[in-house]
Length: 85
Image 1 (spheres, one colour):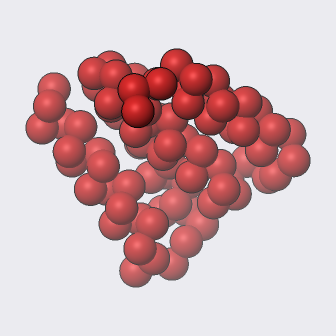
Image 2 (tube, rainbow, N blue to C red; image 1 turned 180 degrees about the vertical axis):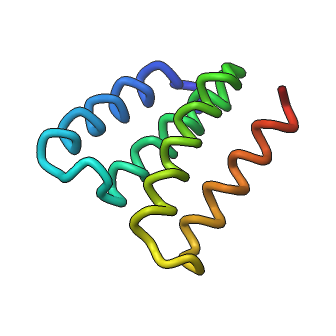
């Protein structure tokens, strides 16, 4: 719908709450980083998108089993952003 700044604000607020409530490598933090990365991707801010997506991928690799679908999803998102850079 194109309301990227509103989405970004909501996702950032969610991330801040999760940082307070959860341990630093919790998979829900990875979801927040992934969501923020996707918003930046849609805004055309690819370096910011890549930074957040890589944080998500790092947490996922540390906390999830190697065959977990979220790892593949975030990896695909990273590859998509890199193609646009």
